[in-house]
Amino acid sequence: VNKNTLTINLPNVEKIMQISINTPTKDCKAIKTGYVKTSIDGINWAREPEDIALDQIRQSKFRGIEKEFNFYFVAREAKTIVFESTNLDACLLKANQAKVTSLKD
Image (tube, rainbow, N blue to C red):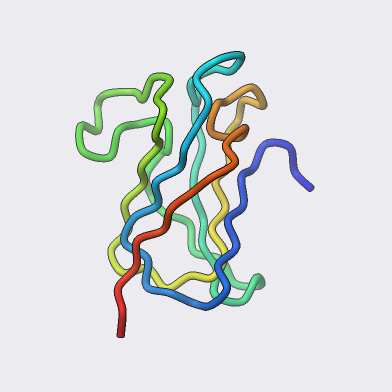
């Protein structure tokens, strides 16, 4: 298990639109840099182009320490989602609850 990743496994492949992750705000730091990748089979991976340390809406703004970390997708088919951060003390890596919003067929 990589200590610098947060992995979310869904029961089935879904067309995900958003992931909202409840993150702690104490005894951790903001993400310095990182990325998210998705897979439908655990073998082939698609890496999203954005740096997860940057706000997706206001791209020049770095995320601070936040209670809820949101990441948006455009109907990305996925069963496994992996967030990776370069700093091991990132609050995101200490999260223990996530909500996935997906499109229904």
